[in-house]
Length: 323
Image (cartoon, rainbow, N blue to C red; front, side):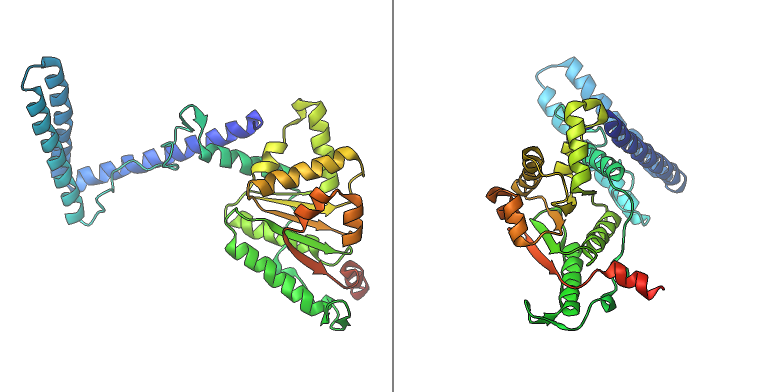
C-alpha cells in the first residue's frame, strides 16, 4: 500500500485532468452551438428519446417491447445524423464526446472497488520522485576520451572500445524500454562511468514518462530497515517493487549481514519474478560477489545483461586535467 500522500497527489492529478477535459468539451459545445444551430435541435431530439423510454417503462403494456425498439432506432438515427453534421462541417464525429485522462476508469480513480492502474502509476511516479536524489546525467556527457585505447588482455579490446559498447547498449536499452525484462548488471571499479550511465538511462526514461527509482543499495537498505520498525516513516517497498525501473547503485557497499542480504534478494527476486527490470551496479568482481552473496542472489544478478567496465578512475583524470 502506498503512503496516503502519494494517493492524494495521484487523485488530485486525476481531478485536475478531469476538470481540464470537462472544460474543453464545454467550450467545444459552445463553439458548435454557435456555428451549427441545427446540431442543438438534434441534441434536444436525442434527449427526448430518453424521456420517451422512461415514459414507456412507466406506462407498461403489451406493446412496450415494440415501442422500445422504435425509440432505440430513432435514437441511433439521431446520433448518426449528429455525426454526419459534424463531419460535414469539418469536425470529427467524436468531437463532442467526453475526454478522459484514463479510458479504463473514466477518471473515477477506481474499478470494481480497487484503485485504477492510472492512480497506482501516478502514485509510484510521485513516490519515485521523492526517493530519487535528482542528480541525473546525460549520454552526451559520457566522455569516451577519458578511456585508454590500449588493449585490455582480458577482453582483447581497448577500454575505450568496451565503454563505447556499454554506452551503445544503454542507449539501446532506453530505445527498447517498455517496463518489462530483466535489466542490466554493471561491474567494474569505482570512477569508470557505471553511475553516469545509470543516471543517463534514468534521465531519458523519466522524460518518456516512466517511473524510475534510483538509490544506492546502502541508503535503500537503511531506509527499508527504518520503515520496517516505524511505518510512520513511510513504506518504500511497494514503490521499489512497482516502479517501471529500479536502479540499485553501489551493490555490495551495504553493511554485510544476513538481513541486508535477505533484503537485496527480496528486491531483486521480486522484480525479476514480475519481469520488471533492474539496473544494478557494483565495484565487486565476480569472485567477491559469489563470496558475499548466496547462490540465489548472484545467479539472479548474472541472469541480466552484464556490462564490464575497465580502466582507471575517470574522476581522478578529470581533476588532473583541470589542474
